[in-house]
Amino acid sequence: MNIHRITYNPEANSCSLYFIGCNFRCTGCYWKKIYPEVNLKELRLLDLEEVMEILRPVSPRRVIIISGDPHENHEFSILPKTLYDEFQCEVRLMTNGYILPGLEGLSHVSLSIKAFSDDIHRKYTGRSNCIPLKNFAMLHEQGVGLSSSSVLIPGVIDKEEIQKIGRFIGGIDRDIPYRVIGYMPVNGLPYRKPTYDEVREAAESINGSLANVVFSDPKEYDYTGIVDLFTDNLRQ
Ligand code: SF4
Image (cartoon, rainbow, N blue to C red; front, side, top):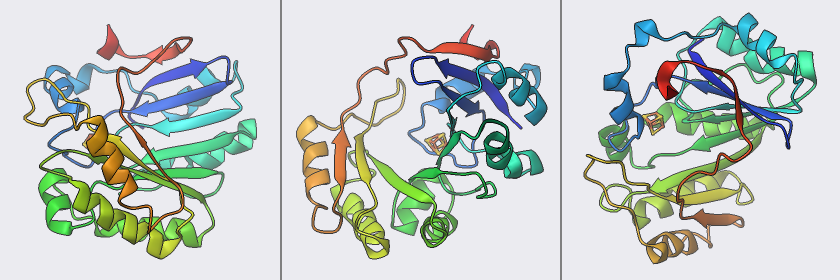
C-alpha cells in the first residue's frame, strides 16, 4: 500500500500514515529532492494488515492519512473503513484529490487545490485538475467534512489564482474552511518564499468568497513529542 512511515503523537493519541510516491509531479515539491536518492525497490512498505498490527497497541483516537497520494488499489479503498471498524477513531485524509478511498469510515478530507486554471495546474502538477475539482464537489455532496488549502508560490501560483480557487470553493459552500500557505523553498528549486504580507494579502483578497479563510507562513515543522511507530530507511 506504499506506506513507508507511521508516526504517533501520544498526547493527542493520534497516528499519521505516510505514503510514498505521488500521482502528481509538482515542480515545487520537496520530494523531488528526495526521490532520486531513494531506491524504491529497497524500501520496506507496509500492507494493510501490517499497518493494523502496528496501530493496535496504541489504539489511536485519530488517524491521519497523509502525504503524497497513493495509487488506486483495494487496500487503500478500504483503509478508512478498516481503521474506523477497528478503533472507532476519527479518520482524516490529506490529499490532492486525484484518487480517493471509499468514503465509509472517513470523517474529514483536507483537499489541497494546487490551481484552478487548468493550464496552470497541468504545468505545475503534470495533470489536469478536472478530477480533483469534481471530487471536491462530490465530497461536499456526500456530506464528508471538508476543508481545503493552497500554496502561494510567487510567479507560479499567485494571488489571482488563489482568488479563483476561493471563488470555486465559495460556489460550493462559502463556509468550507480554507488555508493559504506560503511556499517553503526547497534547495535547488527556483521558487522563492512569499513574504508574510504577500500571504496575508492573498488570503484577505478572498474574504468576499469564503467565510472562513486563514493563512500560514510555515517555518520549520515542530515534531516535538512525535515518535515513529514504523519507519523505513528514508530518515536514517
Ligand atoms: S501533490 Fe504534494 S506530494 Fe504530490 S507532487 Fe504535489 S506537492 Fe508533492
